[in-house]
Length: 113
Image 1 (cartoon, helix red, strand yellow):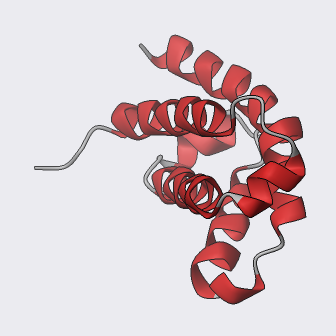
Image 2: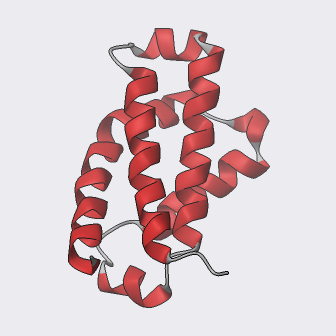
């Protein structure tokens, strides 16, 4: 059975929620030193990118202001170049990009439900 793409959108929101809970009130140094947290955050970013791959093209085109391709590129870099992960970039994504992405994806979900 094919999974409804709305579930992938919910997976994105769930991953963002979990990332925010993992990081909590950590600062960058704590994040980098906490292998369990940094690894979990990277895994959730991978899941976000993988979920995006399962969202239909027409939906992504309708919401073209969301940086779908950039997110998938980040997922690909993390997945295929694990030893080259720049945790400063990951941290900046978590702190500066995910809140906006959450709002955008929540709007997509609201529109399609």
